[in-house]
Image (tube, rainbow, N blue to C red):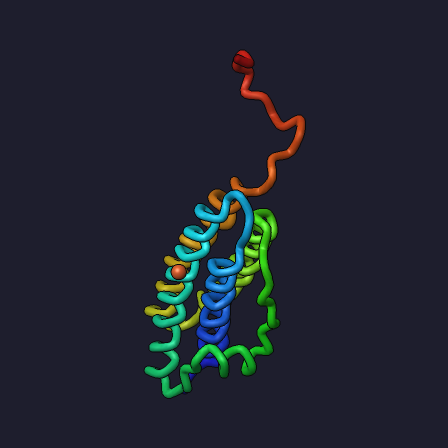
Length: 150
Ligand SMILES: [Fe+2]
């Protein structure tokens, strides 16, 4: 029998993939090209994880859901709109934080699922704490590395 945590994780990744795709289509502004590509990259990674988690759900006799049904099973919020570059970065932070927390709920599942969750948690945690964090608007008066200012 499928664990509800696994089924929920499959639904969350399915919905998150949709949110990344929405940013891919709807981001606007001078940094459109790069944000369009980053959102596509996140869409592909989340969709691959959704596929893996959905297949494990089906393997345990659960029902793997299409995006429409997944969003209602977990009450995923509707959030289609246009995004500025900074709004897209903030959206990535929100969604990836949810993905990391979701993967952590799977670490006490069976070995295959726990290993998958640990591996994918590494990927998403690095995206959250390094790559996407580095995209956040820079703070004034940040630390100096002591070099000369040329
Ligand atoms: Fe596209």
